[in-house]
Image: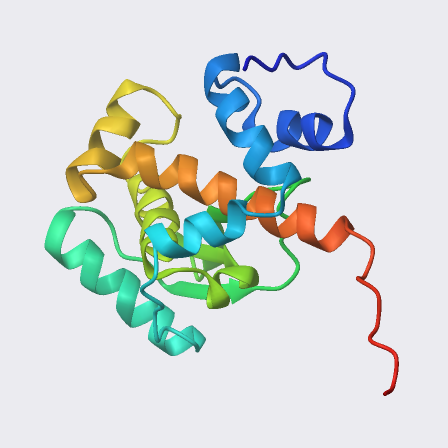
Length: 187
């Protein structure tokens, strides 16, 4: 089955938002799972491990551990937090920013990483993927070949995890848009 971005079903339109740019053959494999409400279940079987990184302090420690293992020479990061204000569809899953402040006669730069708070409840591999992505921006600003090579160096299956994360987000949004099921009548 082949699905093109011009397909007008609600599921296909939503898929275009989350999976734009992927080949139609691949989208054709995802659409039946999504419409049947089984995409989330399939991903849960593929990524069953949950993480315990629940607080901002734990997220900072988690990110610094990854940074220490893979990017010792990169600059310091002053803040790593979950951010409830990040909107997945309109902004990003995470952000990496450099904030410049004048202190005395010197310009000081602080780097911050913010991860969308919905990753508190994500599978462990998806949190790892987004943290690795944001850490890679410490060395590579653009999403180019060098950037993705660095991501793949830190997590060998980075590209698959990025795709699966998009599928997870798609499944969550699809489930959120479905009308509630019938309530059982009292016996």
